[in-house]
Structure formats: C-alpha cells, structure tokens
Length: 291
Image (cartoon, rainbow, N blue to C red; front, side):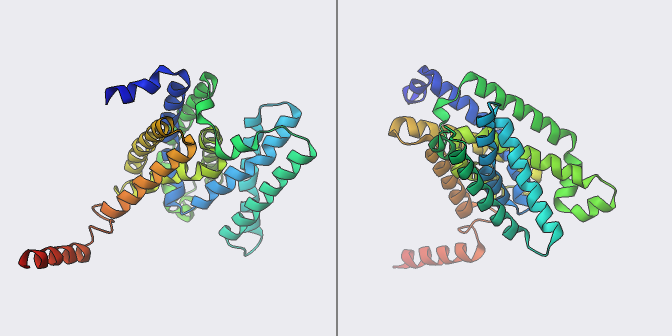
C-alpha cells in the first residue's frame, strides 16, 4: 500500500501536479463557495470560456497569455452586468449569450491571427505538464485571494446574502462585486492548466456544493470544500497514473463521485437519511426478519 502511494512521487511531474492540485483545491473552494450561495454557478462556466479571446490576442501580441485571459474574463462579466442593467433580460439568458459570443469570438481570433494556441490543452488541461513556475504563480494567486477574503469576509458575507441591504448600509457594493469577480476569474485562470475550461467548473463548484450538503456556515463550507477539493485532486492524479487515463477527467469524476456520496448520506440533506426513507428501510428489514 505504501509503495502505491510513494511510487508516483519519484517523478518530478507527479510531485508538481500534486502540489498544485492542493493549492487549486483550496482556491476553488474559497471562491466557489460564493458562487454556490449566490446561485451563480453558471458564471464560472461563462468566464472559463470567455477567456479564449484574451488568450488569442495576448499570444498574438507576445504578452503574458494569463494577463489577456484575465482581462477577457473580467470583461465578460462586465458585459453581463451591462446587459442586465440596460434591459429586462434575466441574468441566465445574458450569461448564455455572452458565453457563446465570447467563445465564438475566441475561435475566430485564433483563426484570423493564425495563433498556435494548443486548443486541446486549453479545453482539457494538462496538470502533469505544470512546472515550478506554474506552482509559484498559483501559490501567489492563492495567498492573494485568501488574504482578500480574510480581510473583507464580513463585507463579502453581507453582500453575498443581502446585496440590497449592503448597498443600503453604504458598503461599496460595486467594488465588492468587482473584487469577487476578479477573484473568481483568477481562480479559473489558475485552474485552466490543470483541468481545462471544459472541466474547470466542476472543480470550482463540485467540492463547494459537496461541503454545502454537509455543513451550514459559509466559512465551514470553504474549509471542508478545500479538503474535499484537495483530496479529490490527489485521488484523481493517482488514478490517472495507475489507470493511464486523462488526469483532468479523473479528478472531475472523483469530485462528482464524492458529491453523489454526500447527496445520498448527508446527515441533514441526504436522500438515504430522510425520515421517510429510513422508515421504509426499517419496515423492509423488519419484514425480511419476520419471514
């Protein structure tokens, strides 16, 4: 058993992958929790795909592609807010429109600019290809966002559950919203290389929604979600090593499996722990015992 755990650690790429997935587990749980309680899980998917135009332009100009991705992702959320404020269109419809529009723009720019971006890696990730530089860049993002959430936790909590009340109290809700969106965008950019944009939303909301089924407080949700996300990532990487399957897909499947397990056995919200289900099971067992 010990050899199964230690053997992959003899390879540097495995050590890098495990270190960065632990960081991403923490990062995604912290920002993903806010998406869950605000019922804005789709926003993560929108931003994940909206970064493509920024990647294409940055690659063409020869600047840091992550800077281009951040600007493009942030711009997509501003467009959504603008559409919502200037019309009666609901936010989910605006998200769907921006999602498809930015994705199409990105694909067109890649073609027109003859960009050599590896779309397969962009879509599905390559966590086994991360380097020490990627690790330290992700570490900086994690430290920055954790400090941001720690410093403004009360304001973020108030805004998350009662934005109108926060505005009435005089809080700078526009800046709070911008800071939160920036943190989510940075999280998605940091996670892209690990699992790709197709699967990044699962890593962003999966551990958080699993924790949501098990705890009640937001800070508890973040803490437990970080543990679930990190463990899911490590289990997925080990599975990908021994089964020779894509690491991103393996990570997401573990995340999904843990969510389904929590959905079944959560003490407060589990399907199998509902009083009527427990009563039916006891009745069935009693019937089997009598026969």
